[in-house]
Length: 110
Image (cartoon, rainbow, N blue to C red; front, side, top):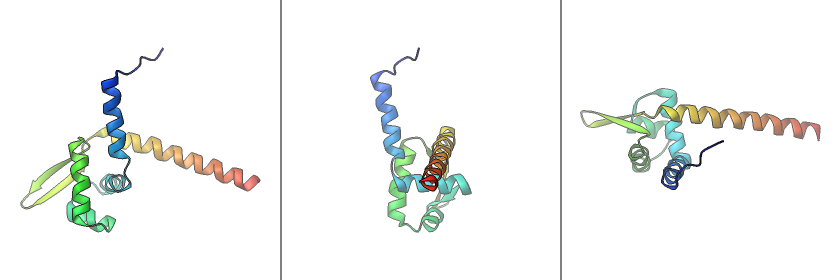
């Protein structure tokens, strides 16, 4: 039997999904996952996005405890610090690949 999560914990889970429910933030996480620690300029270049926009999203990810930052001179370097993010991305992405293959097979038969 599964135990129900207390309402306070459910709200924290919902907030985590809200943070992850933005395409720009997911793109930032994807770049950090692929390339490792990067500074804001490198992330902006990889995403072809403005520094203001990337910085805003990095702040949200940092406030949520998903990314951490390290200062080096005037630059800040960001990295993923929540190990569950990689696992979560694997689960969701793998499921979407399977779903796309199933849909492709269904259309091929039709």
